Image (tube, rainbow, N blue to C red; front, side):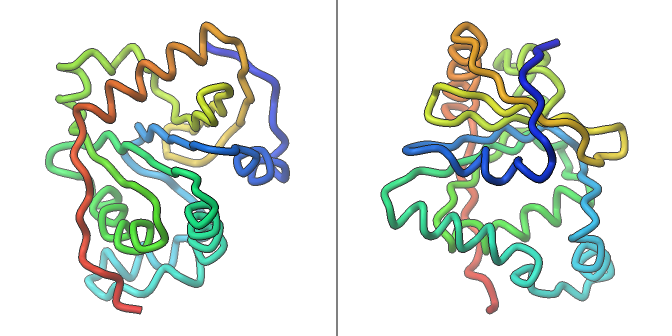
Length: 181
């Protein structure tokens, strides 16, 4: 298991936004249990979707500002086939992520195994910042956020760069409809 320097929960956002050029996230969890999105997730699952803007406005603004500054923010989500209810919710959220300038991509879990991304890339999510630092994001079995660690070991970072390249090469772009807002 990769170990890094712990990041205090209140410092996670600042640490994430320190990148200068590129930020890439690999998402591997089948679902996330994030208290802030409980209401919009429940409404979506009942077939009564509500705008996620109030919950994620800060993220959308930060992405849009970063993109205006020439930064690239991208993620690959490894999802089940068919997607879990939570993963369908994530795909719906793509409309706002993409509208803010984030590049969203997808791989099925089976594709990730077929190309050798899994199980080698692990079971934790991570952000790769400027191809020089890695933020490891740990979750419990229910998808609740756990600890976050900053890793700058060159060997670990180079491996993460290779996994990023593999994931991006084999994934497909999300092309959501424009958000309703």
